[in-house]
Image 1: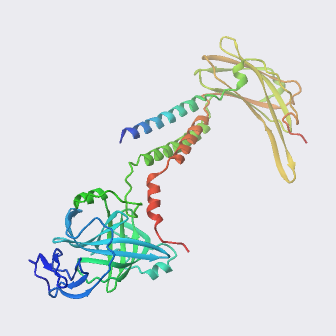
Image 2 (image 1 turned 90 degrees about the vertical axis):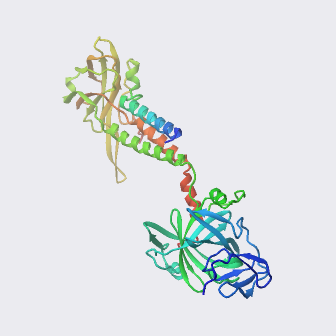
Image 3 (image 1 turned 90 degrees about the horizontal axis):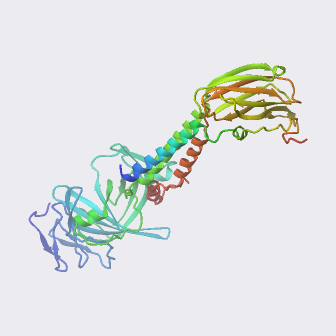
Length: 422
Length: 54
């Protein structure tokens, strides 16, 4: 039996108060907002029962308000006050039943100043049902897939009805309880609702505050007190961008540092295996690119001894570039069961020639040095990874100090999850 | 892309480019005694000259 479609208003059959009829032909019950009587909408609005002393929930919406949600005009036809008590804490929220002549019934939930839109699902996710027992027994948070999105377990809620008013497409009762297992993706929530008489799967999405208020003609200040689990990140994303850019440049700098570390430079002179006694000796090499860092390397095969050499370099004009010395000393042994080495068989000197031409290196052995054999090489275009390493450090440290707003936002969203690995 | 992002990207590119140029040029890697052009004498060698005392 359905109700007459032309009916737009009734008088409460208990208290006589005028009540608008807004909810379409599938409305089963109508709860009078004045006397709390539950009227049977399918049987001439006869009184089924009466609820008294119901605490009216906090909500800016009233029955009869209409607004467009996701392109569909819905009318608020009913209000449920819901409450959950768990371990000494209490959560309160308000569910408004919505009706659209073309799209049927849905829910608008108000919780801590946030608005959430919920509809029953006609299609099923890959997990057709998740019970609270399954959640309790799971080692990992249950996951479901729906339309290419992954939903991860968020919470189990047992809500109790404490207030009813308006029209509903079922028969609500004060004291009714249902348990909902909620799984969340980035922007929506699957809820497996185990009610008094049936099981349903619902899909919830977040409604932007300002737009929703405007759609329903509300003039209320934002009273959001926290981050809702379904609330999208509304930051500009600039911090995330800067962080990504800095991390990217840190990686590029590291790569460049490795390249500069491996570049051998341009070989200008290579004189291997020279016996010490042949010194002093003059080595000539040609500089074609002045202002590039140039390195003279001496490698001796000293072992547990030292050898020092004087180096005098003259430029193409015959003027002294430098007159200095280098020492190779290399010691090694075994002590306490461990091998040790000290010093190096290699010595370098780096300079920056100011003009192109032939340079002369006068190499001699210092008195007291052990006689050995040496190799001499000269390379230009010597690079250093110092600066790119510093750049890597700068970019890396800067990236660490930039707070990632989206990550922090998501942490707040998931902070309310009741999942525990225990 | 907004102006802020363009500035960040350009600044980072400039900083990396500058660091790469300095690295390629080997800036600040010259031996100190090679720039002074003065005769530096040897301190002599030996096992203890490097500070390893037994």
